[in-house]
Image 1 (cartoon, rainbow, N blue to C red):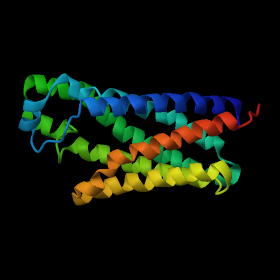
Image 2: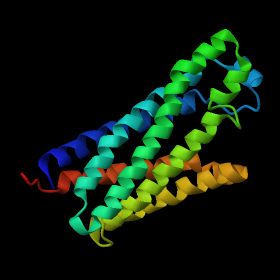
Image 3: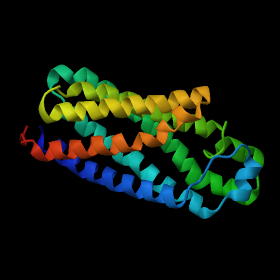
Amino acid sequence: MNKNARKTGIITSLVILSLTIVFIILVSVFPAGEYDSAREFLLAFSPSTLLPVIPSFLLVMANIPFFVSLYYYAEEPEKPFAITGLLFGVAYAVCCGCNYFTQLTLVPQLIQLGKLSSLAVFSMHIRGSFVYSLDNLGYAFLAISFLFFSAIFSLRGFQGYIKSVFVVYGISGLLGTIGYITANSLLESFVFISAFPYFIAVLLMLIQFFMMKEKTN
């Protein structure tokens, strides 16, 4: 594997793991909840509600070089799967990046101005809002990205474990999306459950990057 790509993979994996831990801690300490109306959200809002959004936004940016390192990790026959995974990963970054930036910039302004109609559209914590849908679409793209990237690993040895976890994350992420579409609260919970196979997938990939030998080309 290319020396710079390997180094990028190691650094971004460490960053993603750290940010994921911070996100899990913040979302556990400061659960935002979901609301049926902008008025309900406005009455319950506190600045701490936005704290988990910060590592989420940083995760979006860290994932992009991680996807690039996975592309360079792939052998030539698997490159079509890798480039497809990369493209779906970029689509995830666009959807979720726009959403999280909106939460950190526009939403606080709308709350200060008391614009309930706009808040109902742009707050991700309100069911039926535009950005709530955009966020779910982004994570559907991320799940599909991992499914395509799973094809770059073999079934044998340590790579087999990586492939399995990538597939588990992809399926659990898509189950969460199906839950959102069908309003099934059980399936929708997979959006949060999938954070754990995601964490394990990145951790295993970090170990794999450390185990690999560098190539100068």
